[in-house]
Length: 446
Ligand code: HEM
Image (cartoon, rainbow, N blue to C red; front, side):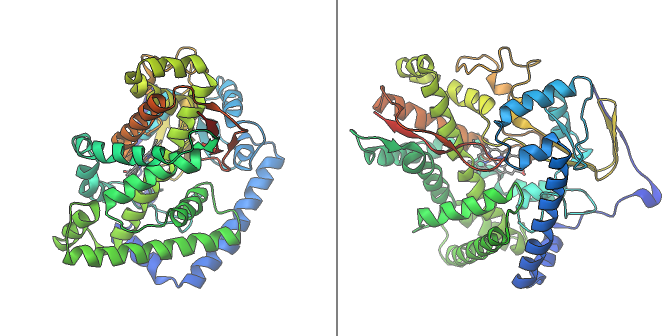
């Protein structure tokens, strides 16, 4: 399989993508009520109508997005079987999709595909949320990403390790020793919030409020559900803007050793446009906890459902790194992403026209039997688990992957050491939504 690209010429050539700051300024010129009206009237209705029409036509992708009762992993296996004779099929929503590991990897790493269509930023999932890096193509993307990369590199993790351990200990000291407790609300959600808030330099945060922000923006990754959800998103964006702008002003006067101080310094050296800073900080904040919460929850769920694997980890906590990789593969916290052809491109015998969208189902690629033996088994000693694509690939490869891995490893080691007989002590419930996969509640007991 290979990707063949063909550059369009003359009048076919899409106009260049707007620069980051121009795109932001355009968004900020719209008054709030107008943006709300646009979202509620246009996005919500259009999305619901499109999905409903496709669902009526028994479109398998529409079925996934409209909250089919079928577990998405069962649906992926159906899609995979159908793709055997029809690679990269087109859903009646107009999107192509794939469950294939090799195609997914090629799409993510190819320069012929971008995170947004080069000529039109109002894509199907896009709407009015500022997702910063996730909505930029090179070269704007490269320039902005370079500024924050050093703060999340592997080298920095040594510095963060003790702070993460202290946070884990503080949270686990507070859970009840002799009665059931919800791992999600008492631990899995609190840890990544506390860590990312600490790294960014946000003081005096209110955890329930931040969880609400995460739910509003995280939920919007599947599309805005209702006018109420749209209003909540706008409020969240306004609140985050206020929080970050106050912090930029404080750090300009009193710089510290945190990510925000680094961004303020970059702004003063004209390396980052001021209007790009809030979106970037909001992405770091929300990507920092809306995903890792599910890594920790999914890992504990898989381990406790496979007691011999939990026991193996109790006996040898050094297996925690493998347990993290296998969880990312087996129950991926981010199930899918989307890409758009930036030019006419061929992949797997299919020609993509410029602007055409494709959904690589990361979670399905992570169970591709061509790459993973016994893909439906959870095995923390799997030798090639790290070949998963749970952190995506190419230019948008997760910036926080080293941090997420570190948090996951420390969390699991602490849990097996403190609670070797931990077990599930109540019904588990999956959180709503398609893009992010995790438990809403996971009641456990020592
Ligand atoms: C288990 C936890 C995590 C998972 C599964 C995850 C997954 C992902 C995925 C799949 C993408 C790329 C989406 C795409 O290609 O369209 C991504 C991007 C990103 N992630 Fe994570 N993430 C996790 C944790 C974190 C953490 C802790 C941070 C903290 C800063 C973070 C920050 C980011 C950022 C900034 C991007 C955008 C990168 C870019 O577009 O250049 N993530 N993540």
